[in-house]
Image (cartoon, rainbow, N blue to C red):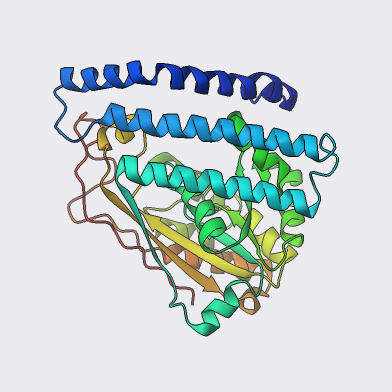
Length: 365
């Protein structure tokens, strides 16, 4: 259960700062301990899993501490929060988020051996002009640790967008994210209350407030792929009487059936927005903490694909749009490498084999 906001501010935020200071003070000792642990475990030369993880954790904690103090300074400068919702302070909070995510991106890619490659339309003059001509609604696949951070960072730092994100309420347990995200227009979804009308209304509010640089980010799958979630998603569509959507969902064995309610609400609330579909692969096999640990250093390419569906192509009834959403979702070509089955190699305790990055192919017809 998520603690009340006052508890998170008065307990979790100061605790994060204390932990950061403790890790900094103890970092030399922790570095020696992780190196000794690696030698005792007969780790292969060059992997240094513990040292890599310690480095990234140290950067994360220091960046979060700095972000919390920056947010505190903005709160004081705004008249104890009185002007936080004004445009100048919104811009400053987006700048803090951009700095925070860029720092974590650089630390993560260097520590874990991850490289991000994005397949997108050629940057012609027309494409460049259209990128910030209209707001966008971004519908992304959700699979693997950190994929949402990579996507938001791409929108902020590469495309110059101001993302508004629909995310899990439990992410507010991270103090830095909690403070920054709650001062910006975002929606936190609680799985125990996802059926309540209030979340749809909040998503509609976010969509109506989009300007030309705005980007509303939704993960229609609602969670990472697992066999159980895949089957439950199909059963949910059948219970709702949408056998057409369920049939299409069965054709997507590597993707969860999209929960289209939030996406439909957003498209209806902001019909002038383009719809961007995002596919990615490379982190989706990392299901558990053990998978992440065994994969370090990942030496992995995260391949992504961005495709736009123009706004006018979505101005139809909700039933047609729902079918179109599932149809576009099905175009994510994320087939497993030959001879590979999802989940294999995890239970054995051995390090998962590395395969060439799967290149997502996405079309919006």
